[in-house]
Image 1: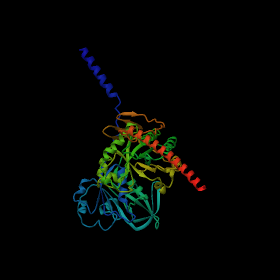
Image 2 (image 1 turned 120 degrees about the horizontal axis):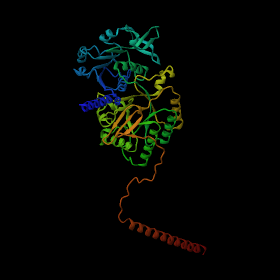
Image 3 (image 1 turned 180 degrees about the horizontal axis):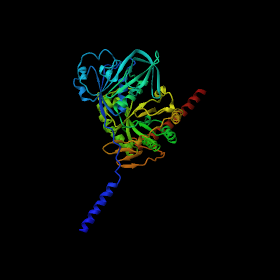
Image 4 (image 1 turned 180 degrees about the vertical axis):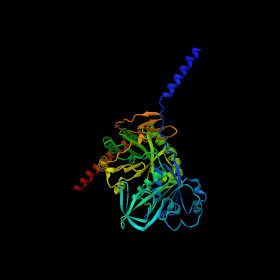
Length: 514
């Protein structure tokens, strides 16, 4: 009996000790991408509103949102029922009141709504207490540490809601009163206008963050792109040294190489990238250049991207994401073939649209940086010392310059900035191919579960490389001997000919004297 009691006590003690052990650490959970529908009446080509749909798409991507974009004319009945969030973009005022299938569905829509345009719907006006104060006025737009003067505002609205529901302010030139730029009260939100490459693009991001309710904090990053194997790699290494000594982590978005990856040029490229990685730089793979003949190429983009990622990983270069123009995320071919390896992306503004299989629904990433030219931010900044992170993760983007003076100028501006830049490796990023799983966690890099050291020095790559295998040649020795015989015969013939020329000249000279 005593033995049984002792056994029970031992079990109780062991269970108590197990309960007292600390819980195991769990990886940071990535937010599930939400989805919404954007409905627009016009792309406003040739007006100040041109590009505002694209600007909104990039902002939504930075909040990990999967968006579907639909024109009012192409709307299909019942589409609204598939989405919990709706954004309406009104670039024209003559289309929204026309009876249509969209208007019918909207009457019964119960989801969250954001309206961008001059004339908000009655439902929003009532819920947000909007009152029209003036039309077509010039005003100064300000929000946080930013201000843009003399903005042409189509309509000025005030709201009966408290100022804690307001976003930014519009101070009309003809009046002393200030009006809100944006107003939000769940589940509705409103802004009177959105224009690409203006302060309104930043101002609406403050409203979007609260309307979408993302939980993660935001940071600033530095990204250098347009890096090729034939770039000045010594200059790239010097940039890495300059930023490392200043304690500034950065991201290098590198162009991929799809063939001849055993050439010395590629080896030098990898050595430079390893050195960048050792100086607190992070590597991401930039999208390849899309040629106008991309439709005719009989190559698998998936296999090419996989090969390049594996070549880097084999030599210890850990790619943690992808950099690309935003339209890649709205293309089914590029998304499946080129972007499916990555859970993180940096989406640059579109420069040249080269769709292969265009889709109206985007691909959402667990981490997506909003790319920005630093000059754009500085244009509206009131005080550089008061710059808190923007509502979304933001990447200050530079092209890799080819002149040392330009590089040092960029490095000096970053050193003198009041902005604190985050290390991309501190967050969790995963890149997977059939051969490798590459990831980062709390500043460390892993390859197939093994933690990678990032120390690397400068190494020289030999230029002695056989670019083409020598083919086996038959009768090579015989032709070599034959060539030598012909050379000797030609040489003897030249000597004999020279002798005849000299003798003939002397005979002609004697005849002339006689």
